[in-house]
Amino acid sequence: MPDSFPPPAPRRHWLSFERLHLYALPLLAASLCLIGGALSVDLQGRRIAWLPVGDFIAYWSAAHLALDGQALSAYQLPRLAGVEQAALPGFAYAVSWHYPPTFLLLLLPLALLPLSAAWLLFMFFSLACYLAVLSHSLDQPRRLPTLLLLLCAFPGTALNIMFGQNAFLTAALMGGGLLLLQRRPWLAGLCFGLLTLKPQLGLLLPLALLCGGHWRAIAAAAGSATLLLLVSVMVFGADSLPAFWQTMAQARHWLEAAGPSAVGHAAEAVQPGGIDAQWLAQGRLDRRQIPTLFAFARELGAPLLLAYGLQLAQALLAALVVARAWRVPLATLRRQALLVLGSLLATPYLFDYELAWLLLPIAAWAAQGLREGWRRGEREWLVAAYALPLPLLLLSLYSGLPWLQFLFLALFLRLAWYEKALLLNKDAT
Image 1: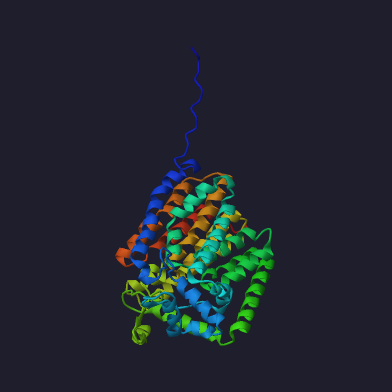
Image 2: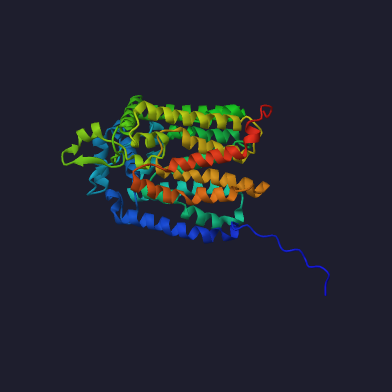
């Protein structure tokens, strides 16, 4: 009889790559139900057969007008609505266009295709770029099937497809730029320059690059953004910029409007004689879909200045943490995660389909843990980051309040707390 027994095998953590697919299956089923439900209610007529065209109808229609030499008409809702309704017979709404002429320039080739083909090309191209960025972030090529399952199960994927939006593209530009920053700063700057198609998502990016001393990326970003703007003005005319700012003023008016939410932006009322002018003057965005502290405060009835003050305070907190994280020798992936989360917290104008951005810090945080080992509670926080958006979205739908932004804030503060020793060290520069 042996005198001793071999030591017991180390206990495996309940969360491992081998088990991820089991945990993701319920969320995948829920996401499929989300898309199926959206198709069954017809997305207010914004679909072709089984394709949920969603807000992409505005992209294609604006590009169609621009290709016909009528770029300014894209910023005039009655003219845009006419193209949309011609493309989707029976569509009784209008999706407005609130993007700079630089994005319109990038979309021009899609106007050469039928609407359904343009939607498929745009969605699959942006999704492929998004998947490539996430795959390189995790650096687990043999786990690609698991990554695909996790991507499909994440509610942000379903939301972006359902609304026909550009969150895959913007997330790929931000994530790709961050991945290229150390080795290919000029290409990283090009990605950041293209991100100006949705400038409110990159509010903290210049601050991070300045604090990190990434001068070549800054030069490339400024140069590419300026060149893109000049070309778009040459193609569409100088009046396209004032037209863009005018539509942004309208969107800000809808965002700031007092009172309970009403659907705007993506479904403006169209009367038999054209756009309802009274609605345009009194309309409001559906703030349940805007996961920002500003929208939460306004939905509770807070005065406009108080709501902006709360949003500004949160943005300053995010800016201070991000600036410090990019000045100290913090692990690259963790500083990137803080930047993306901080960017989601800084802007007052964010929609729930931009939830696709949340996979960027999740992937960066997970990759750092896989490389260096996990700290206490990290994996549980990542599970919460991945699993909680869907119930929070449902809670927002039924409560009328946008709760999702508090998840962004909790993740940002938790990650900063993990790094507090380095962030608070005055000598760590």
